[in-house]
Image (cartoon, rainbow, N blue to C red):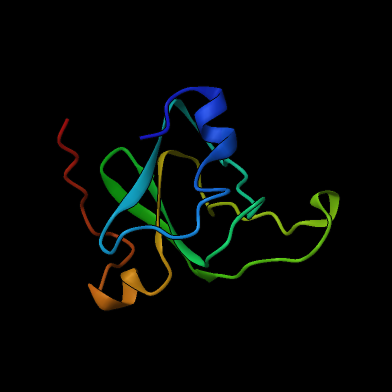
Length: 107
């Protein structure tokens, strides 16, 4: 779980892999169209955008980029969200995760 600003800035960057069926949840205290990028990422991901407990958008198979930091593509949801879940690329297809699905988050 990424809660602090520093944890959110680093995210999954500088990791060689993410264990199968794991992810990183970014939790915010307000809703916004948060920008995400692939800075220091070494593997592609799916980004699941969540508003309260509902998936409102999915960015599938977000690729690595060799662009300089100031030229990295920016990814964002179509609507404001308060949570973002990053998982390995292909997980949303593997488990048939779709916009409108409800999310159960346990502490």
